[in-house]
Amino acid sequence: MDAVTTFRRAAGLPAAPEPLQPAEDYGFFGPGSVTWKVWSYPTSMLLGFSRAVTIEHLDPFLAAAVDATGQVYARTRLRYDRTMQYFALVAFGDAKSVLEAAEILVKIHSKAVGTEPITKRPFDANDPHSQLWIHLTAWHSILYTFEMFGPGKLSEAEETQYWEECARAAEFQTINPDDVPRTREGIRAYFEGFRPDLVGSEVAQRMMDYLVDLGYHILPERVPSWLRRLFNIPMRRAIIATMPDWMRLLGGIPQRRWQDAAARAVVRPFLRLVASRPQLELAILDFTTPHTTAIVGPVLQDIPAKNPVTYTPEQARKEFDKITPFEQYAQILAKREQGAGPTPYRHNHHDALLEFDKSVS
Image (cartoon, rainbow, N blue to C red; front, side, top):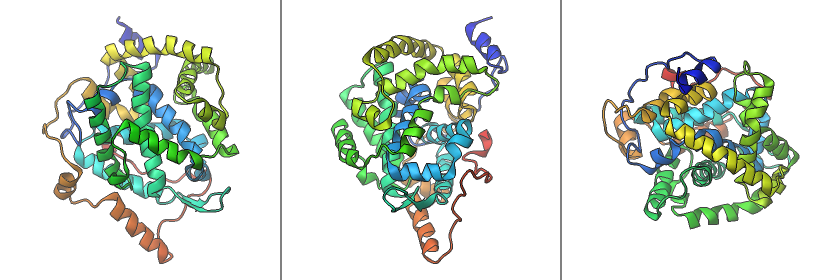
């Protein structure tokens, strides 16, 4: 019995994975894209997304929107799985599925509105300012963990291409692509400019301390608590190791330098092992984020798409008759001005979930 089969059985998964189906097309990036190179490396699913969803809560308006629903605490694993599913669709999914997922995302966010308790200003999860912060935090975190715990830095040409692809992906949220920086220097300037707006509130610090333990929360409940904690320790240390000192202080999650070094010494070789065994990476996906397996699996297994083409967002919207998220958001705002529009979420709601992709639900 090989190591992958042993892992699958120990994890309570079928000994053999479900047969993977080819994608309809290569979506908006495809083979040869830097997005596929970086996002398919296991740093993305085990560290990058966790880093992103943790530090993004330093934006008080995002933190208020998330805290108002109570879903981070009530449905932690499901929420993480669906967040992974959405970002995986954008990076690896077929064009039509991406456009449909973008529509669903705007609908989900349309009910996350209210008043931010510190500034007393309104928050709106679809706000372009907040969406750009989320988007850049995710794309930067995926790349940064790839550099620190994966193969290392990209070439200058690859990094230029990566940020161009980041701007392309921004077209599937309520973001103006012209606002997306195209260089590392531009990204750094964006974060420096955003830093004065970040707040280490009680809500943010509680949320960050909880989310940096995603290594514990994303494992199925059938896994013994002691084993989840054992897995989480190096994951937590590795995620915090990617944060600058000021961010750790603001988020209330301090960590010593020797703990940073220990995390790198343990986690880096583990991720290299996973990257060298695509079947193992697929099994870990099945275990931690099952909604993502059918999307990323064909990429890990080099399964060609049925129609081996890539689209630009404009081409895809024309072919599949879709409007932009900006246009969809404008319609929602117009209805809200008339006293109509979606009813805001209640705290700890149990509303029916809108599926990003019914084929993998």
